[in-house]
Length: 138
Image 1 (spheres, one colour):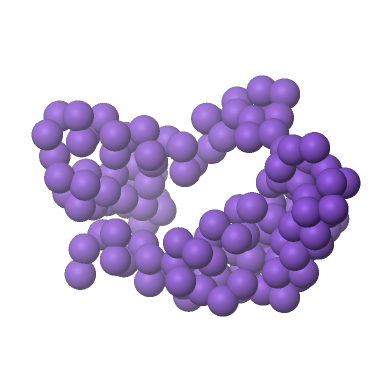
Image 2: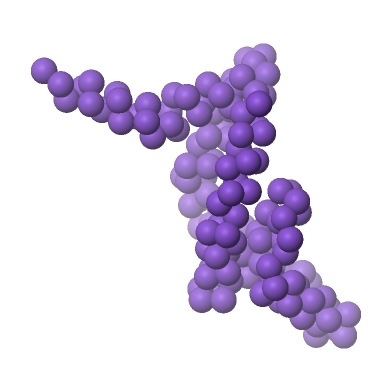
């Protein structure tokens, strides 16, 4: 099984909690981009769209067809907002993993090998815990 397949399987098993976070962001925090995130997540991992996301998407489409909105940005928010969201994303763990894999790919490593190397070093909690334990031991 490739690292990409492992990641897909892991995300599918944790999809309920991931989609719940999207829902809280969309409904509770008013984060418009969370709806698009949920739709994308379900499409990418071949998951059924949750009812709340389907209803919100349908309502947005109806508003667009009736001329109530000028742009999809009104529905999903601007891709990077005022720039602060992009800065937060750049600092996030997923961005760091993506950049680390990208650097290894530029050096000629396959996507599977790059992902495996990144997952096994910097981003594996077990590995990091072992390194920290080794540093603390006399």
